Image (cartoon, rainbow, N blue to C red; front, side, top):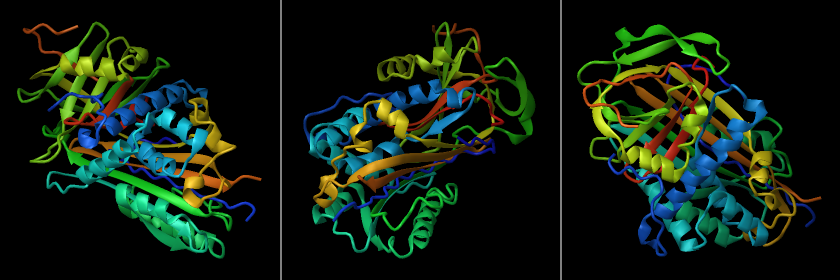
Length: 424
């Protein structure tokens, strides 16, 4: 995993499926109540996405490969891409994907949910930019089922473009990467690496998510100072620390004996309310914050918050991450998709399986706000306690913390991350 610190927050998310043919504050709601009808307007999908966000964070945080590293990913990007993948899965392959991603068994709830959420995300707003896009890139000679292509377009806004993977795989890769860069405002580059598209590639599914917003209460750049940040190892590093301590520094805030919660809203005009949630442990023990990465626990903590003046110190940071998720998702229960898979819903045959899933993300947090983007590639081959009222709490994020970017009204978690070292 590559990790760099830059300075603004951007996410871009993409899913690439390379298939081979062998043979022939508003509402502080993190866990919406699911409904048995399509009237829940995406609540079932949001609940599924949020559960997956916490499920995936845990193994990444515990993986020795990432010990002491920052973590950052877009659960919505990954789950959106795998929803399109799931539409082509059958039998135990579909059952395992549905279980890992908590997709509703009711197909109408899944499809109408994503259709509603995608339309909501892409509704124009003058105060911030929030976009998501899907696409199918198909080998021009390969006979995909018309029903699968239609489903992807109708419910996931994924139009199909035919490419010549067989005779010109690298040019096809360049075309796909150019689309990713465009949809993520040039924040995610070279998502599909050289050599990953071959003459045996049959399909690439892409999903991109991009966000850029400004704080309701921006930080004064003149007050940003170098300050110590304590690492989990006990060492300290110098970081640019932003400060907001004036009388207008009023935020939804909550605390317990072990943790502080701060909710920082973005400008939204008349559109969807978005915010960044920060979970800051009081004793430098990040596990105290990780305990709240649970729909019930986080909802209770958010519901206990109240708007009040807070002395805020937050480091500027930029993170770039990249993960290969095959082993992680297999260990979470999605095993068949990587072996004896059944994706016959895509082509009417059982020759396809997932060879690897790659996820890349970028986030930049500074005085003005946040920019975020993420991308996921699914490569498929063929088989062969409350504060006292008289004290102003001090929220000094000078040690590792967790943050989420969330739709306040629906509770949908768009991004989640861990900052171990703002300098990368």
